[in-house]
Picture (tube, rainbow, N blue to C red):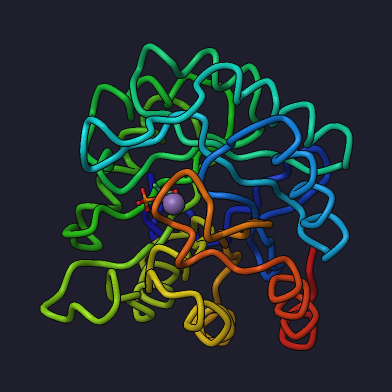
Length: 264
Ligand code: PEP
Ligand code: MN
């Protein structure tokens, strides 16, 4: 079902009038994690003012260590839904387990599958019937074929609204957190009709690389970007402050991107 042979035309996912795929550029921006109602409200206002369409933020965080901050949970879903509604933004949040799919689907417009969960097949199956669009991140060691097979699990359950996300893969290079595989964008668009979103934040792990790799992703044909932005990155509650843009950098980037592709 994910193959372009099966479905020659680009899939366009319409969420409350915002059309993702088929030549539009969607920008999803926001913090790694929802930290407080005030934080997410402030950031939502900045994302909207800059021209972004979707507010990102994790309420449930997949952390490498069990003692790290794990997210504020359901309260965060509510805070983000309120901020999105108030500022006229769609919302995207990560869901980590099948048990939490229903509640995340109740509050968010798009559900995100993280890189660590790309082959959590029980989660993927559950997302096949959740009724909400899904952004499926590529596993950091997954091939294109494995990513497309993971998407297939969601599609096979009856959910046609799947976006693929390149978020960097693990290579021998340690200067960057991951290596953003730009080739994934045209390759996946050739193999599949699904929209392809690029994540230059996790793809590089370095703030100064987010702007050039965002532009490179758009030049390579990405249907959208998911970018971390924080009002106080040095004090963010996850380690992802180092890759988060300051609000003025985010706004300047979107201005530049508008020259390359129309923001939907
Ligand atoms: C995130 O988007 O904050 C995240 C945890 O992403 P990934 O699953 O790509 O690491
Ligand atoms: Mn993050």
